[in-house]
Image (spheres, one colour):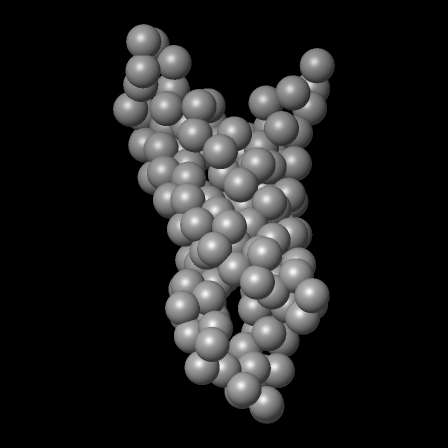
Length: 146
């Protein structure tokens, strides 16, 4: 997958690296009662768009490795690939939780709201960490030896 000769992966990773942590931060604002109303819809939207970018980055990265098998033999690329698989699933779980909690916002009360907020916060933190570590491994794979 290319656009004007540039691998699509090199383009879509920027959306994943920026929007994944941003969505996670919005979710952390959402779980604080004062920020709940303000952050609700931006969190849901950012989580969905971030998940789309992470899926696109994962698929375009797979395509890049399939078209250049020698890349997969590099240790830094293997680390990036391993972390990308984790980041994909963590981000998808986070996006589902963000949508469910965001849509059920007014119906969640008491312990259910607390549990939803706790799960959302854990998934948000996991997404931030997974995306940052994956991006760091990718940067190391590309720029590490220079």
